[in-house]
Image 1 (cartoon, helix red, strand yellow):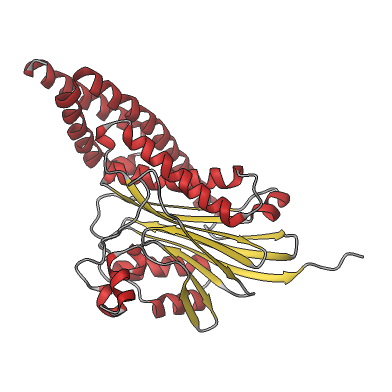
Image 2 (cartoon, helix red, strand yellow):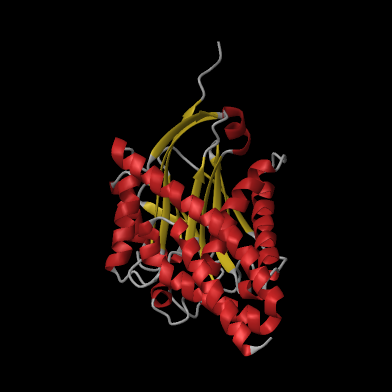
Amino acid sequence: MKPGRSIWMLSASVRCYRMLLLSYPPAFREVFAQEMTQTFRDCSRQAIVEHGDQGLARLWSLTLYDLAATATAERVRTLMTSVKQLFGITSASSIAAEGSLLMFNLTIAQQTDIGRTRQSNEDSMLSFVPDDPRELSRKGALFVVSDGLGGHALGEVASEMAAQVTRDSYYQDADNDRAASLQRAIKQANSAIVTRAAQNEAWSGMGTTVVAAVLRDDTVYAANVGDSRVYIVRGNTIRQITEDHSWVAQQISAGNLTPEEARDHPKRNIIYRCLGEDKNVEVDLFTEQVQDGDLLVLCTDGLSGLVTDDELRATVQQYRPEESVQRLVERANENGGPDNITAIVVRVALEKEPAQI
């Protein structure tokens, strides 16, 4: 391709992209537009150099899909935030549902924050409690946290795909074996990310951690890939349910580092397993019994790396879930906030199902 034509195509593409960014809410554009434009310019330049017109066309096909999906999501999110502020609705919710053995009440709160140094938020989270009591009894409630890797656009897409595909796949799985369903759902999320990354070289390097927990009756099923975590807080104790797939976790297990040394180690952010790296991924699974009054905490390393286990335990014990997540995020930011910060806190209340007369 002639140099003059390449320059014209790049310039025209960037101008069109900037116009499409107007579909996002103003507050979103103020924070992300410049970096998104720079990322698109770099990807376009690479696509033109390596594959010419066809490469740029493939990039645009992916970009248009993502712009439509994310711009709509941001508009809806902005609208919902405005409605909640108007009517004083909080992000915490209580759900009472009748299971096959127990009735449980969940108080749920979640929050994500960009942190103090990052230019974008590559974390994703979701809490899903089926409206249908039969579905809730069969599959339980699902909570997911993911931490994207690969840079602004890549990390955001990968972490969102991990959360959404895990949820959709889990509830579409007809198998009543909840542990197996959860593992399969995360593997399907991995396959979706690997397939997406293979569609264009510009998406190479897309990846994410993921941690998911299903709560049904008095059992929690937790699964993870990477270093995002699930904790259980009971009484005056806190225990990490999942195991990190990180270099420092290996060194702690081998006795070469203490947890305190690992917290400040230069290699603390190195992980050896994530979604999107390979079509075959190993998903660890953990099963725990829960008791009345237990608290579950799902979080990314942007929180667990900045807030000690004792601080986390004391915070969720002292405050209601909604205030807990706010205080945990504030604490991580007070300690520097070098990464995105995400947490879900779930308070569990259990009682036996009334006897049928």
